[in-house]
Image 1 (tube, rainbow, N blue to C red):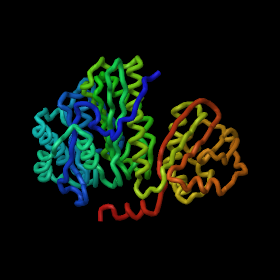
Image 2: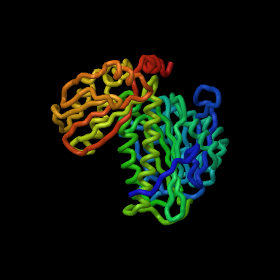
Image 3: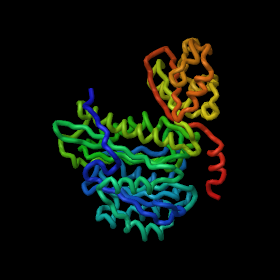
Image 4: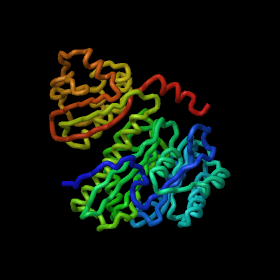
Length: 408
């Protein structure tokens, strides 16, 4: 059982008490209307912190540094983030620059360098323009209002077409706890993290170990279940920070308050993940894939992810082609336990396959369903109770054109 969870109007990462944020344009990216490329999230009170990171074997120095500074019983005050430059594959200079960025931010905020984290996102193989960092990090004004969160959300964008922000709240014994989040991501997105950054902040007081287990489970069901183009990034970072500013008892697992907190974090992460898939480079449609009746939840998660990531499924959705054979192929290549003769398949609740075989249906109705902004694919395996969902987007000519000239 969980307590009621409510949406916070105009929610963002600063909706949680005690968090402030801001962003500026430093000139790392090309200029544009209201464009930002450098931001900070800050908590005056030290935060318990949890993190998940890219599983690529080539990773940014910022990821390496954050991994060193995030762990059980460690606390942080701030994270500084730049967009437009990944600080990846630049040799030893990458770590030197990452550490200097945290030093500059820490001095600006009056906190410890070791309690400051850093993220970068953008083009790989380009060094951070530290002259700009030295000039503009001290100019970042952090505020605890919605505007501060919005400015930070703009600062972390790369090819994104819009910001991604949310907050939810719940009450425990008369004390309101808030979980707010922000993310970026649009391309180089594939399960097991992607070219994405996400920051979740809560004013709940949370045990450090429980904070990490909560984030890991939420990421498993959200960010690790999205795909845009099958490519995994070098910079992926998700951070969850808890400063305890709401007051109330510590959340440490095993009770209703802990279950509610975990569900609130999951909801925030799921929303941010879906918005990344929706905002995929060149995308015109969000694809949601549900697999139910699997032998286990893990099988269902794997199969739904395989289908959402399939290039052939993506192109079929883009072309409004009810080619259910591609869906079968994608589920089958997940190599999970199934019985082909028991599989049912649906497009936006219209059944097109029963017991492993195509059935008579109104083709135009399915074509029309595939023309919507959101396309729901459901595969019922009918051999167990396993359930999983994944999200992707269609693959269009615009994606190819955009990425063929990304750096030129």
